[in-house]
Image (cartoon, rainbow, N blue to C red):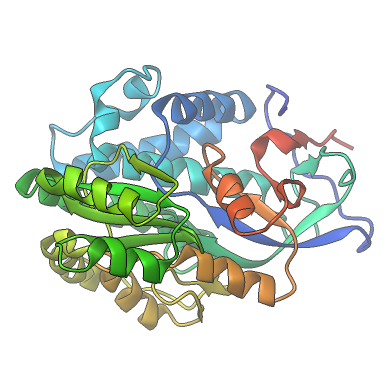
Length: 349
């Protein structure tokens, strides 16, 4: 576990040996409130000043984008039963903030070792060297900030706006996501979505597919999934059917909102949810973010692309362990993924 003490200045790097080329992965918003609150407290213990700074910027962005009636972030993060966690316009900026903050703490600096060392057996005293980044759904925005495409102060405004318009779309037309295990994308498309209004929303693994549908159609979709051979059909606790045409109005509003911002070319390769391929242009990312609102997250393809680069080590930068589990579904052994629980503060030299 991470030691609960103020972060010390990183110590100078003394050797190139022991470096680990890694993919940095950023989670989406499908997290339990208790995991988010626990993670907030963990980061507060590690570096209270930096955590307070990031949350203050997030609060300012919420008030700017959502008005004076916006959520009080720090208050809610101390109460896992807060009703705010049922609202995507709160959860999205919070998860984005905590994920970017994590990367800011653990990232290596030029000429310096990372602020943490890995304490998982077999990985002690080795340095993480980011080679590629990817984010699951909302996590793409965290990846874009970590890779230098959009600074945090602007990224938190974009994410706050995205969360607001997505929640409005959910309120306007009630919809839900259903996870189906054991069926391929084609089997879900033919056996579940065909001749219904259900749409594939996430391809999390070759046989772990999520579909979106109107709330009133849930029983029909669940029945069809079971009849098609789905091994585990489960409703997801989300505000609505993200990454489907239920988010069309939100996508149109996001497209206009993004015109206010300049997206730079990334400092690291980033794999896009929309295509599962690397996208290296800030201009192309504007298109990816808008189209990604109404098209499936191709996470299985993202991981396939990363593995094709020869990357065998993954860092989950953000609350929870959802991406560690998805890595396992995609054939990546548990020991090849680390998260905050596998790091320890370095001693000051």
